[in-house]
Length: 469
Image (cartoon, rainbow, N blue to C red; front, side):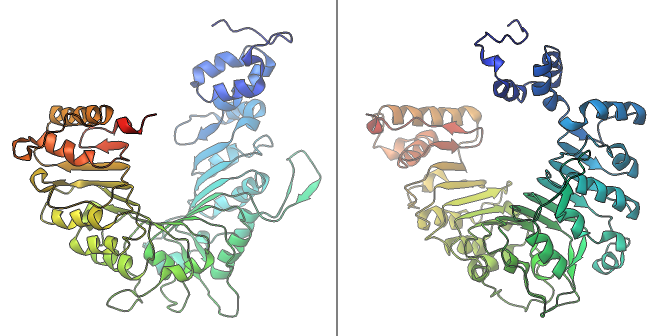
């Protein structure tokens, strides 16, 4: 296609700025640079895709040349990654860099603070995602972390309730809170009151990640902020219930998040001050909408304990294969009335407990997504365990005697043919069936099935013949 400059009389779609800006998101940097040279209008639409991101771990820069670059393209920069050194902060201290949407900082000392404060204030009206990793304490302990002044969060910098509309505009504009949607803090310290202030000043905050964050100074006389709109939380169990090891009476952080829908439990560490025996904490009292749980780390006993005693009416659950035990299976079955999705990540060759995991699709009748790639089901016993989840839509499992790629492809092809032609090729002689046909007949009973994985790749099934108009 020949590229021409804008013509007022032209009716080409490329004459529309919105179309050009959309196309730019699909092009590589070299192509965008070529398009920038067509005209001033094209330059404005394609330049943001070229200079969208600065990564200080990747991009080489000469300070003088970088300053000239910012003079020309600084207003197009939306994301800055891996700010590590004071020179990184100094280099982007430019009046044109005033509309960043995403900032990632790895602090190494107190000397970062002043320039970081300037950057956050300058871009307070545009930042949607902020990640700050504070220095790892030496020695690496919670006590030492609390003793390091450089690890304490300056909440005022993040919520920045007032700012200038631009670095060249002297008119002061006042707003309540920031625009943050995503916040991640690592090795940080702050008081409980400051944490409440941070949440109050971030009304749009939707996703929060806490990793080794110490929250100190809880006082019962200071009311907790319980109006956060947060829906997605990533934090360890210890982080939520023992955010300060020296204060056993501090209430759970879940009290701040009444609208929480999903909790990614990043580490399975039982809080040190919890009583021994089954966990009796009912998370639904403070988070009634918490229905999606992701267990990222190993902790079989604690996982089953939480599923049975703490979580209520779980709809979606993700586990790792190391946590697969009969007790975990029972924990999942405890939510059979509401469970719609079960995903197990990783491979576990031990098939000792496979029969326990037949119980999940047998009893959890509302399952729509089942991903149990960790075990291989015996094709000869498929009729023994009657699966009750007839509304299954996505299935990712493996079967014994169906190991080779060509066998799997043959089985899936046969299943697709049966669905296209109404299952006319079915044979009633089960004793004479090979593994491919047995699996195919087993899968054919799930009329709503749309996606199947048997060990190679996802297969998207055609609709059933009888469902066609």
